[in-house]
Length: 271
Image (cartoon, rainbow, N blue to C red; front, side):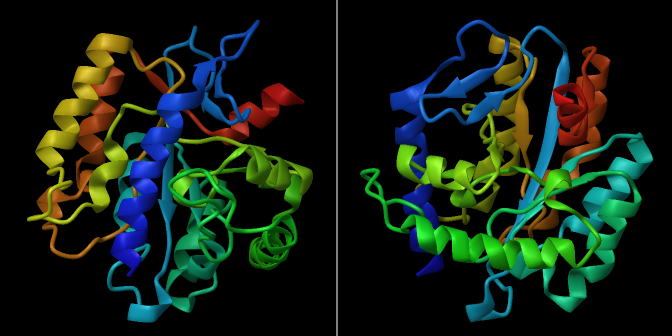
């Protein structure tokens, strides 16, 4: 059931992007028609690495988990790079991940969330599935988990919508709760690291990385929001997990002149 939902939401996300992406008027930020940021300053050779995660309670984290977080943190530390992390609050409340959440904060990365329960906000046709009051209730539980680690809403006000999918109504509902929204840049393809070998939509790590470098060659990576799941999806080997190639990705992008920032840097500019 979970795989079916994710496949459906991935296809819906692509359709939504095709229908509404455009450059924000009068600045170097790219948003979609719902006002959600897809690229930050496109005049600068700066990349925003973002890592999401969710813990699937129905199978004790077999399909969805945050088990890649420690290797990701180790690589970021080794390379001297900061990232932005957006696990769901269900993930944050799992005792096994508490040391990693504390480490994210202590090592200076940005931490927000991806909702509490990974809500499916709209269907494939863009029809709203979750009313504003239910989003508010979910976010209240999300905030309780973030606050538990000594964070304030001012510190985690930038967030990625669950499933990276939304419509105008649900985007407005999230903003009305005091959140600013960003989403991974479309076309990078790194978010396909959840696909399962043997299925029609499967993308191997080799294919994902080839697509990433083709995107950079064709478009540049200025201002992009680069998503890599810090998750161990089943049936993929370690070599087939993009986060295991994070060091290689960072080194190659640095060699091309790119630097890395987080949502903390965006917030500092906002101030």
